[in-house]
Image (cartoon, rainbow, N blue to C red; front, side, top):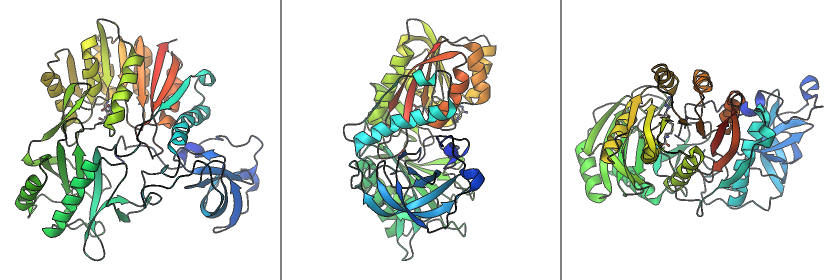
Length: 486
Ligand code: SAH
């Protein structure tokens, strides 16, 4: 749960703001449907919502049921009552879906990040295309009925793909160190001893760190009191080289068992080449603090993508699924269809993975990211790969792109890969003014994509939308949009 997370995923926003898919003749808001908490009724699930919940209608009122699947008949039990929708849980599953499967992870129904593990994979892929359609129907960008939505590109083996585990660390009632994810909308930590979507290398090191923390009696953070040391442990593996980085996010700087911890980790896990400490003493649910310090090894790990080398700092973003990243980038580059000697902007560039992959085919590539460490990595990565026609700057896309345009840099091609919040309004205006000939949008949030398309389609036609499943077993959906100038 880290990619692009500054977002607006207020859970039911997507449905709440408008009369999305509500039958036109519905009068429930005026008349109100009489329901009480705990009430039970039979319900047929019609489809899945944007967060992977089952959706049905009780007397025309929208009902969200976590864990229920399309075509299932259930006895629903009301857990929440809102003006425009109800939430319910499955009291009894009367008719299971033919696509219902047993989740591999025992805790799948409890923690976030496994919303679809009970759904057969082909149906997950169909859902990811459908969710794009639902978002388009909600926002209705110009011509959306004619957009070509290609079938989602999935994985052959949709498990074991996550290159990064970012787990909260606490002590349980018996004083044992536990590490994992919170139960949804709570701060109850679930100790994840196994996790089917993580690359085995991340879990192997994570459990090793947990065992050592227990053995060396390392203090863990106490959220309520704001005391204790280790808040979060981040383990990231570079799939191409096997190199592993461990980051301890701590509430204070002094780490009494630092020397022993580092020593044991380096001897027991030869794959660990980087151990870092990040200090975050704010009472916040944000993971990272401002200060990062090297404890041992080197400050970056080395990833390889499409035969290019990428150094990667702790704070820098990298796509979480290395197997699908290559496919996502292939689709993006295909959509961009550069011809000789064109200038390109790689916006929201991270460590420069996209821009450096196209530099050979371009005259010049410029990119930007808000994370300074990522931008430093991107410029360094250009040097490592002997690429000299790229340039990365620190700053927001919405300030840097207008600045470049004002300076007279008119890109032939633009590729944007924003976080879940989508594109800033000012940036959209700048794009519509500069109107680059070639334009590709990589989105990780169908909702903000559909919203942004409303304005973008004033000047651009959507050629097609290609969804790529970067996060199997979750409701997350990534897509590449190819535009041509209207
Ligand atoms: N294209 C990269 C990174 C995409 S993730 C890749 O494929 O790896 C989105 C990136 O946008 C993150 O690196 C994040 O730090 C950055 N970001 C977030 N808000 C931004 C903004 N307003 N302007 C520029 N970059 C931003």
